[in-house]
Each structure stands twice: as C-alpha cells, then as structure tokens.
Image (cartoon, rainbow, N blue to C red; front, side, top):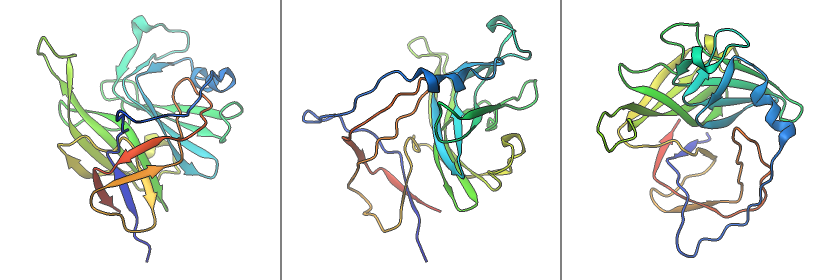
Length: 227
C-alpha cells in the first residue's frame, strides 16, 4: 500500500548564500483568463491546484465581486474567498469559470468559522478527493496591526471535486494554531520527521501569469500530514 505524505507549511530559505536562477516575463495572452468574468473584479492572492484531466483549481483570498456585469467597485461585495476552474493547461488558450455562493452575506466558498474567515492556500488531489489548506484570519483592531491577524490553519477535504464548487461536499479534517499549507507536495516514500527537502520544480503562477524557468527553491519541512 502506498503511503501518501503531504508536506505542509513549507517556506522558502533565504540564507546568506541562497542563489536563485528564475527569470520571469509578462504573459498577457494568459492574463486574459483573469478578466473573463466582468463580475469578478480582482482578489488578493491566488493558488493553483491540478485537478487532473486538464482542469486546474484556482483559489483566491479577499475578492471584490459585483452582482451584475458592468457594475463598479462602489457596489462590490467584499468576499473573503472565491475559486475558479481553469479548463485547459495552457492559460493562453484555456477557459476560466469563477465561483462564489449566492449573493448575500455568506458568499465565500470556504465557510467562515464564526468571526474567523478562510484564506485558501495550497492543496492536492488524492484519487477522488481534494485537500485544500486555508489560513484562519480574524480582525485585529490594534493600532499597530494591519487590521487583521492570522490565527492558524484549517484543512478541508472535498469528496466530490469534479462537480461545480458551489456543490462541493466538504468537511474539516484539521484545525491548528500554526500557519501551514503554503506549499503541498506528494511523496511516495517515507520522509524524515525533520530536515530539508529540495524541490527542483518551481511552479509559480499568480494573477499575472509569468513563465518561470530555473531552480533554487529550498523547502524546510515543518510538519507532515498523512492522508
């Protein structure tokens, strides 16, 4: 039986000897998919997860959404998270469909936990299920703060990731006070409980897509989550 280890909470190492060889350039042909729904005006942050069969899940943090095409930011709802499905692995030719819940007070895809809201980050598909990690965030009224603070992480398992995201059946499988889930990797063999793992793959995708070449990401293992 294959044991699946998901490395979570990976961070970049910026030591004094760290060197990077990535180069990036604008990719306007791919950027169009982030302007394909005039009701989705933009978001803070974006993560992509391969769902297989040419489908990619994009998850976004705070998002401005309007009710009708042509409406402006003055009438936009502030939604703590939204998602999109990209159909086709080449974003310059792919189609993108955006999702949020019915217009009202609870429009986010990943539900809030009382006064704590979710900012989705990375995840992974394992067979027929999808695991998505989220940062747990709440208001912080202190003058020296940014107005919010992270209060841990939460992981959701989606049992039916092939249906419309508004019809997902999801459940919480992890809730932790630490910030984890920024990078998730699938490994087919046992990993040490502590140490370093280097990844030669740099899949960097954001709201303004870039072609990225090279290597140099050095991940620190923070924890292991077995699914």
